[in-house]
Length: 269
Image (cartoon, rainbow, N blue to C red; front, side):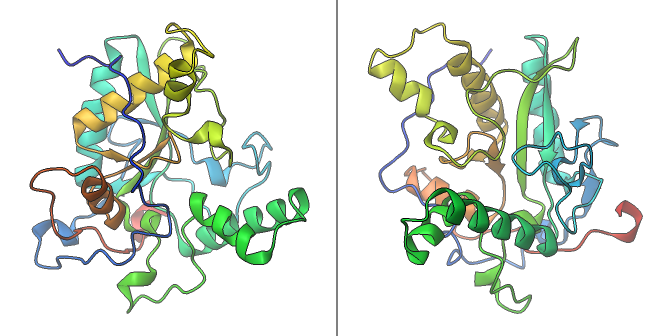
């Protein structure tokens, strides 16, 4: 049995950000190119559309994001990998909960705008370019989106990216991951608590460290790659998936992505 508590590797110095993946090419001849989006809840997974919530409980937004859809949908191949990861954590009395996957461009634009405004208010000393660089770390830029130009496609528009966290299977309570979902802080970097452990600032039994390890290992062992600046974000078949494999020096990494931008079928809206 694979060790879900194995340490998370430190982020490579070459690790790309959410703005660095867009030059990875696509292979439209790959049979997975036309793979459909599926409703992850209908596939037996625990979901909650974070951006569609209207109860105010979806920090840091506390409101519905424009264009957000109720269904959490991803490519069929991504769903299969998620089910494998979910089965792995089930042995520990846990479930994987998907908070977001396929994301319409309107929602992507709403997230970009939210963090631009938030950062301008919190860090007025930063120049516009400095603020934009920080926002790009956490949000793919939707402003140039052009369906004809694959260098402008946000990764969540492909259905190959998923945002997940761990919950207790019995109670449904979210586990403590040491940072909130979509928190734009170094605490969100996947290896943050590994670095604190190395410096002796936390113990080896810190639940934030262990919960992140379980999530990371279950997802990576299933076939995903993790975005090093967001412990909750995982990819398969996207441009960022390929870039991450390259950054990690993975042997036989694919040369091209196979999930391009797509639309939510009417039956899933």
